[in-house]
Structure formats: structure tokens, C-alpha cells
Image (cartoon, rainbow, N blue to C red; front, side):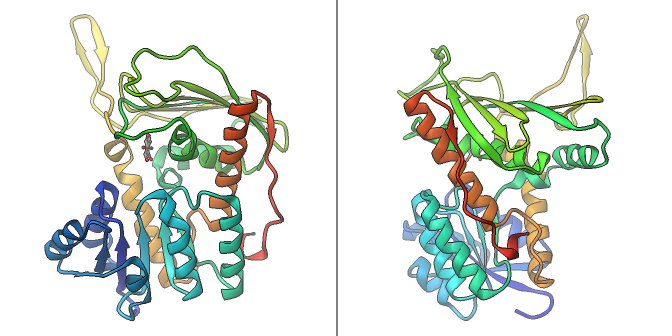
Length: 337
Ligand code: ISE
């Protein structure tokens, strides 16, 4: 790595991985994709050819390569932990899509490795922290504009899912964004979580539970409700309303023209997360590259990945028991404070 260009290797060339390769090449000024890997070799070779990169023989070979300064992990969820640990052992910067791992124990191992290296090396793919709307809400909260925040009402609605979707994914792949953004907005950790039963939608295309209603209580007693519709919703629609002592804050819809016609006012909504949050995905990588060059990452950390993993586990447990479940976390290491 020279002072200006970070040579990046991307593991996983599915839809998300390809989009990241594109933005690391054409949007982020300080990065260049030099290597890619996908378990489907043909896909990796096509991407490598298009972006003038090398197609690596394995994820481990890509991480080890002396030509790669930093790694982006956008492969299948169950492969994240192994690749992250490899990067941390080698003191390489790494960007990991959610979830960070499938078990809290693996996140703990990662935090140990990172602490040994003595500085933050990992940024999680919690892109909403870079969305203009959420940033403005956080600032308003921190500036005391609505007094003490008391609760959050939120909704995460999807039109459809890729095949193979399962009930747990509503937590580990979908609500995980609300798990992260709510604790980020409120600056607090969770005490207890619960999944409440709700009448099921006929518009679900598979056998998984949809919708699900999730409740969170923070350490200071704030309550958060998250309605999760993973299939059959009218649009990709993300709602977030923070209720404070002195006022409320609403997440804005993306800027679009409103139409007045036939005695009605209307405006369009997005159909997919990639377009709804496109700007925030760009921004998270721009900030990641600056963080690497200054050795000071600002996005969500391994600790945040761990917190979302422990919270997901407690929610899954609550769905099974029908009871509220405690969120039990270890002590936070110095490098995340
Ligand atoms: C996807 O992985 C996301 O991150 C989206 O925000 C979520 O809405 C979608 O359901 C997930 O599959």
C-alpha cells in the first residue's frame, strides 16, 4: 500500500460482491481491486477479467497475497468468520458483510486477535450508519433536540427474498440492520429482547414465518419495536421513528419528486435495498478507505458485529421459548471504546 492507493481483494462475487467491486473501482478514489475469489470459479474469472484483477485459487490465498492490502468479505454467511480470523492474524484490514459470524464465540475469538494486533482492523457492513437520514437523526438526538429518547418504532419491509430463505434469516440478515442502527442511534446496549407472535401473511412465497414482531429493551429502559416483513410487502420500505421527551424524529424517504394528479399527491418508493441505500454503500467504502489510510476506522466494529450476533441469538431463542431473553455480552475491550 502506498499513501494513496489501497489494493483490495474481494471474496465472494455474488450480487453484493460484484456491486462492491464496481464501487471500489469506480466510486472510491483510494481503492483498486487487484484480486477476487468466488467458490464458483467461472464467476470470479469473469469479474477478474472485467476489472483487470487476478482470480485467486482460494479465499485464504487471496488474504495471504502480498499484493493485497485489504480484504472485502461478501461471501456466504457461514464463511465470514474463518476469513475474518485469517485477515486479523495477518494484521490486514478487512471489511465484512453482516453477519460477522454465526456464533458469538467466533466473534470473541476475533476480538482477541484484533486486540493482540493493538488496533482496529475490521469494519462491519452496517451501511445504514452512512445513510444521510440516519446520520441526521443521530445528530439531532446527540444535540438534545428531542430531549431524552424514550422509544423507537421501526419497520423493515421487503417485497421478496432470494430462494432458500429461512425463518432465522429474518433476524440474522434482515432485522440485524435494526439491531445495529437502534443501538447506534441510542448509544446504549440491549438488556432484553423478545419475538412476539403475529398473524401470518398469505403473501409469503415460502414456508418461513412472516411477518415477525421484535421487541428490544435497552439497559436504560428504552423500548424498540421492529416489524419485519420479509416477503410480499408493497415496497422495500424502511421506517424509523424515534420518540423523545420533547419531540419525535422520522427517517425520511429517499428524495423523489412528488406528483400531484387526479386530486392526489403521490411519490414512488424503492423496490430493493441496493437502490434504497445505494449512497450509503458508496459512503461506507469511502470512509473505510480513509480509515485505513489514517489507521482509524470509523464504521461499525468487531464489537458491533459481536453485539448484533449475541442479540440475534437471544431473539432466535425467544422465538423458541416465547419469553423475553437476556442479552449477555462480555466486557468491551479497550480498542472499541
Ligand atoms: C439483505 O441482505 C439486506 O441487507 C437488506 O437490507 C434486507 O432488507 C434484505 O432482506 C436482506 O436480504
